[in-house]
View 1 (cartoon, rainbow, N blue to C red):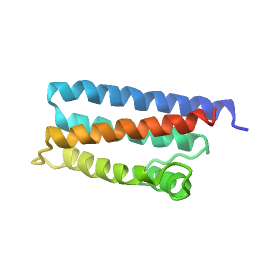
View 2: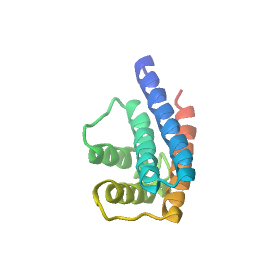
View 3: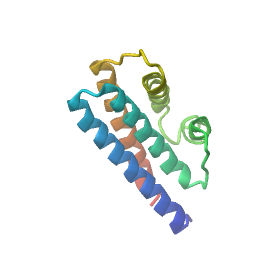
View 4: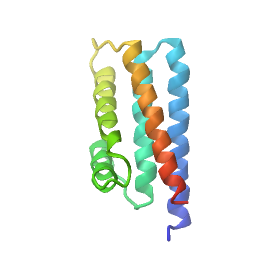
Length: 132
């Protein structure tokens, strides 16, 4: 049985994921595509952390969160493996957007990233509803 603390933390992180994806959607209309890429990535990152909260796992490194999530949930098939390429694409575009001064991300690219992030969060939310 899951502790109330783990459930509360998981729900808090899922809400953060939803807030971030909602913000990304609003920012898309304003044309700030780099921020959309950033918020879409962090929404998915928060969703992964929401799942891992149930295991009592956290990491200061993004790579640690992603690796643990993949190992325990995607590779095992507990959560659909189709989410794995979404993570890769979000990481790549977010890093380029945040750290490459001359990187240009198109509306089409971030629109796709946003849709994928929304789908990712929906899958995580469905999974978490089975847990609490």
